[in-house]
Length: 318
Image (cartoon, rainbow, N blue to C red; front, side):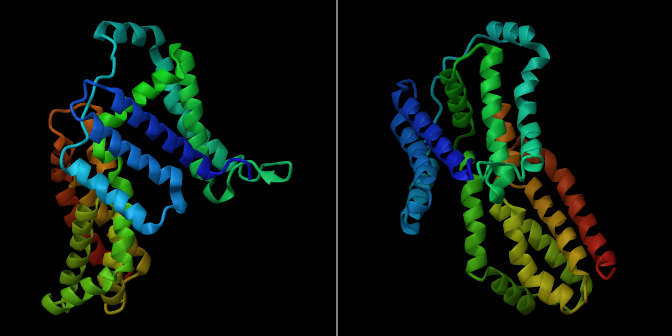
């Protein structure tokens, strides 16, 4: 193949190294050394990849967590333009500003469908095992190039804007990466069996409604803890869904899985751990309350969780 996923990992690592270097040189950042170290360590994860021993990768992530936990990642100065300059630029460009953003999904769809079997000199043009991600990476590069052309800016200015956005997001950028690892650890450690032992020992699962409620609420709670419904699913499905709902009450596995995931998404609405959905938007919009998105969604998530419990109770044997 010609374009592998590793190529984009290396590009992302190089970008993070550049962010670290810019943070180190920013004398207006009160914690420039710790901020630079944080982003440099994250860059190593992408640049070294599978060459890193698992213990070394784990130690890097722990060190990053300590730096972020003690407030070592802070904002600097980014040479922002004045409000007047930004308004003038926005009026000049108008709706053309949407073109770079639209290029990303358009390129992703085209690459993952039309270029699926395209070869060049006997080699696949795009990595067939990671076709969607490679297409997404190509779309991102096209979007950056188009944005530079539209705004008459340089790639260096694109890097400055990247650093500004990354700094505003802070540790939340790394959170999905860490939570994905946490989900794998929970699965490998046999968390599903532990959950099954606890719920069957201390909760009366002979009542069908109780079993359904434990499954759905457990999905939401584990998602709140881990910030990822896909990480919570194997834990609760292995602990309650399959052995109790399917094994004892003969639930339809498809219905059990689908409504279980909907219940997990209720947890997603209520946790700051789901950084991509709840913390990143607040940071990008520069809201004064970082948990504003979560607070607004709780009123929707709780009634929806009750609806999911009712749906699973009445539909599980269909």
